[in-house]
Every structure is written in structure tokens, then in C-alpha cells.
Image (cartoon, helix red, strand yellow):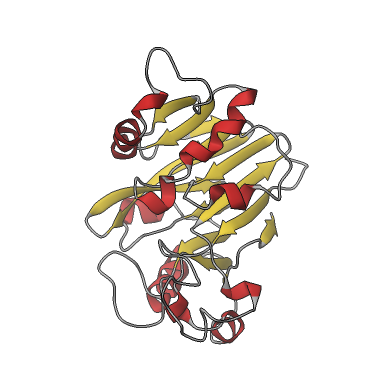
Length: 257
């Protein structure tokens, strides 16, 4: 790859986003755009290859700033609404052909149940044309010119997907990970991983200290946190508390790898 790989954080918030509806805390009233977080999603690009990671209910707004070009693939981490609720909004991309969706068996089943109108013999005009592929963990496949390794992590008691792209890994909504999958992250240089907040343990999400310890166990050189709540505090103040090599991502942050 001579051309650089770019990774853009489309959203870095949790299921409720930031500001949180009905909350009047200082963070939710902040005018700093770094404190405004849409639902978690990302866009990975290399030349003509464009991979969307997750597709929550903010996806229309998140993709509007980008040139309207085909999506090579959409990778889904799991079936929760904040990660799949925007699939119907991808319908304009059907002008380029079928939209290739990759997900685990549970998520594929959820898509079929939630969007049966996309899988009938005679499609209604204008519905998104989805070509859904079922993934198996640990089996590398190729999207355009990018190799994708699906990994398995645990979102509480729920198995979900994470993804490795060479020296980059993207993990969200993780609470725990098996030793086998942790070993498959060996050599990752840039890690994107969820970090919900500083305190008050959650049954299915890591806190900041958990995420720091995990990143160190993997040996990542640079770690960016995502899927964060307003309880993190102001973005700049929160970043100042992190050790070297760690940063809280923000919506619109673009990495060149």
C-alpha cells in the first residue's frame, strides 16, 4: 500500500449520544464541538476502498460531509440499535449496486427481522439493496485492497465482533476478551477501543482504566478511546488526565496510517 490508509471517527458517543436528551450537566451544555458525540461509527478508506464500520441512527448526518461515492462494505459489530439503526438510510448508495453488509449470525438475523422489506422477492422501489454476508470469527477476508480479520469480544454476556485491519484494530462495546482473541491483536500499533467513563462500573462496557490496561496488554503504540458518555467530563480536561500514547477520540478526528 503506497497510498495512506485513513480512518475517520464518524461518531464517538454511546447509545444516547452527547448531549444526552434531558440532561443539563455542564458537558451536555458545552459549546465545544469536541464535547458533542454522535453514535459510534467509523469510516476506513484506502484509494477506492471504503469501509463503513457500524451504521447507527446518526449515519445520514455523519456521511453528509463526504463525497458521495460507493461503499465497498459495511462491517457491523453487533445488532444493538445504536450500531445498526441507520441501515435504511444507506438507500442512496444502492444507485451504485448492492450494499455489502458483513456481520455475525446474530446480527444478520436481526437485520432480516427488522428490515424484511429488503429481502422480499420483489423489492419495493427505493428500498436499500442489501447483500448480507455472515462472518465467522478468526477467518480473514478481503474487502477491496484491505484484509479484514474479524475477532470475537464479549459485550457483557453477548458475543460481538471486533475487527483488525493490519496494524489497526477497532473494538467497541467490549467488556472482556478471550486470551485467544487477545493474542490475535499482537502487533497492533493503533488501537481504537471503547471507554465508557471514569467511574461506576458497567456490566457490559469497560471503564477508562480497564481500557488502558487492555491496550497495554496488547502492546499498542497509540490508543484512541471511543463510545464515551457525557460522564467522561469535558474533552480537553479528560484528555489531560490520560498517560502518553492514549487519547479520547472526537467526532471528525481523522487518522492517517
